[in-house]
Image (cartoon, rainbow, N blue to C red; front, side, top):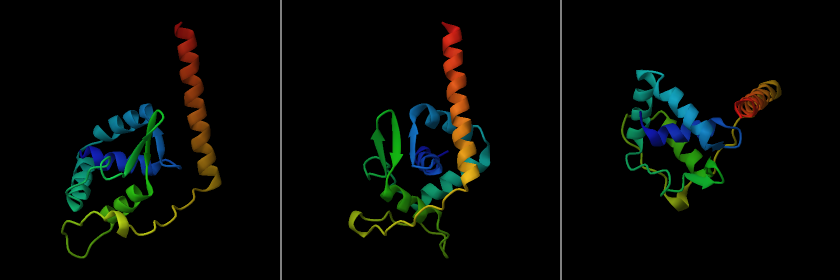
Length: 134
């Protein structure tokens, strides 16, 4: 499994591109144990941008308690996921030639609402477990 590609894929799955470290670790653990398909997919995506370094290339920023994917990070991920006619490595987009990213598709209201409610329920369950443990 390619760590850097996995981080980009996880962050882009969050509505605002930001995830706290606990969520990142949980999602990484799930993907790491999901089997060969994920490992092969991330390896294939990573091969398209051989010099990928999410922090030094400013694709991901560290923010209070978590990480956030940048506009440039979204553009590089789109570049990696593009299906080229010839299967050859793609160059990472230079700083001044980053194309304006396409706005992410909005989730249906019900889906976003369900996700938010699930997060709230998990947070409440964690808080209850902590208070019961003390």
